[in-house]
Amino acid sequence: MNNSNFLKALRLEKNTVPPIWFMRQAGRYLPEYQKIRRGYKNFLDMCKEPRTCAELALQPIERFDLDASILFSDILTIPDAFDLGLAFHEGEGPKFSNPISNPQDIAKLQSFEMEKLSYVYKAVEETKRILPSNLPLIGFCGSPWTLAAYSIEGGGSKDFAKTKQFLFQHPKAVKDYLEIITDACFQYLKQQVLCGVNALQIFDSWADLLSPEDLETYSLEYTRKLTRRLKEDAVTSNTPIILFEKAPQKAISDILFKDLSCISLHWSESIAKVSEDIKGQFAIQGNLNPSFLLESDEVIQVEVQKISNVMRDFPGFIFNLGHGITPDIKPEKVQVMIDAVRT
Ligand code: 1CP
Image: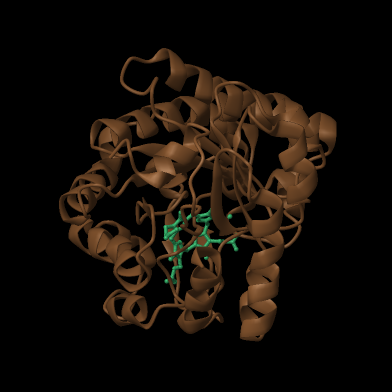
């Protein structure tokens, strides 16, 4: 396992061919996923079936022979465990029936009961059981900030206007909530490691909502607290941590800190610039724009080549997309991308 190209890259060791996995590799673009998905009305019910989760995590591995697997679950399981009432209705994104609407909602939150998410830990165990034994499994959570944004907004949104207003009106309550979420994320990730995950990824998918100062105050401060606790805990101290920051209003080199092993680079970043800035200190994962996978094979090959040229001698490079794959992408295009990386 430790000799896997993926874990080697996270230790900044060079690989002749970069390891490949991609964000949202299990999901709606795969017909074999759709087939299983049709059996569930609410996506969350599917996440509560450990065997199904394991099977879904395995699908892209079997189809594409990828170098890492990611737990099949969602970042919104934690807010759901605080009884915010998560559901994924037919053809819609996530919706909370009981979102955080005022500071009192935060003051009266029950403490986090880790066992409420036992279906996730079981999914980790089940996935480890059926994955090839040398294939690393990535566990994950949302960043405290991203989870707070969904909890306040009550679901996905283009501009998160409600969240921005709430933050302006109740900064102290938001910070209280972030503390609670940070603690929950720590317990949650620790349990995933105990059940067998080999690396962790934190998704700060709504980093781009924040100004540089607010990014520090509401997002990075809590992500750092979370990773510090992971590094201080005997169970999790050796588990490498990857951070995904979606288009932050701050340079990546000013965001990274020593408890991280790797940055998952959004497609809007210049991989040439970032790789120069952080070479020898952190691994890089990314950052092909998933939209290129809607283009011709030639375009895909050219874009992969551009990244490969820049990253050829970079110690610790993992090929990935610069954000999640979208449902409109054809699996054959993914194969074109993978072949281009490997040849
Ligand atoms: O209807 C369906 O079939 C559900 C689609 C779906 C899937 C396949 C959702 C709903 N979540 C997932 C799985 C998922 N989500 C995984 C595991 C699969 C894999 O990666 O192979 C992971 C790691 C996530 C993480 C996740 N969920 C993120 C962070 C990554 C990112 O894209 O920035 C976020 C923001 C979510 C929230 C979420 N869950 C689902 C949707 C449609 C969304 C986005 C909602 C929005 O803001 O619009």
